[in-house]
Amino acid sequence: MTQYKNYLFALMACVLISSSHSVLAARHAVVVQYQHISERTPPSKSASEAAFIKHLDYLKANGFTVWPLEKIVSRVQRKQALPDKTIAITFDHAYISVYQNALKHLSARKLPFTVFVAAEPIIKEHPLYMNWQQLREVQKAGGTIGSMGITGSNFAKSQPNELPKQRQARLEKEIDLNQTALRKYLAVTPTLLAYPDGEADEVARKVVKSKGLIGFGLHQGPVSRYTSLTYLPRFTATDMASNITNLSVKLSSLPLPVRRIKAQPSILAADNRRPQAEVELLSGSYQLSGLRCNDSKGLPVDTYISEGGSRPKFVMKSEVDEDIGPIEYTCSAPHDKSSRFYWFSHTWILPNQKGTW
Image (cartoon, rainbow, N blue to C red; front, top):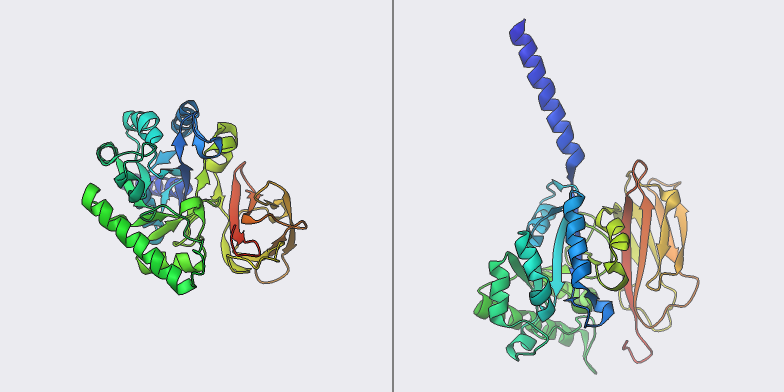
């Protein structure tokens, strides 16, 4: 009897451990993006050093796990579990302020992070950027290196009179030359790429996929199996978003389980100033009745919800003309049993009549 009781207790313990792991396990992560860590650079692309410290303190105080971005991507690719509230920290362009004002705090806390690098301004020794020796110090401090193309120029924009195939060839060269430079100076061949300005159309994503790279934009939402590996989301943590009150909701966000999106191509016709998208969802613990969507300016986007079919759907469309340039519709819906929110966003680019923005 005693042996039977011991066996029963052991079995119950295994069940409890297993169930606790299932509660704490997740299949998504939040990726946070910075550019400058400084009070002297453009606010739209900057977080102050004091704000950055508050972000790191918040992560520690609220049970977040900071992982290397490559490890997160690998888990998502393999559909493997991650700890709930997993975060990756990223910096675009390798600006000198990151070396001066962020590296010491990351190093002291032994936190991993990724710096996305475009080699040309570094080769030219531009004072706004780190140099190669400083980037090697970044690597020693636990930072990994990603790519942004050799020049760091926008992947979605065409040069004058450039055809799509010509832009495709140019982007391939952008990536290849940057990989060569990063191998030469930093002894790495990145597998991750951040689109400059966060902008990518179908041509750019096709190139990134052909090169075997994982691409990151700047549209909002967690990384998960519901997001494209050629255009993964990140939350910016600069400007107004650097306020920890605003950022904290995003850090604990959940991925809206999007099954399919029907929408116009990424680069819209110049006269299509009110784009729309139909989003089909899988089942989940979201409250669709609480869904709210906004555009890039923070203005409400009308949503039309349909729950009568085999799967829930909603259509989002602005009732006002959008401005020339990038457009992002961002949606959130409350979790039905907690204070957390599900997030999803979709992007387009609206050019002018000349095809530029």
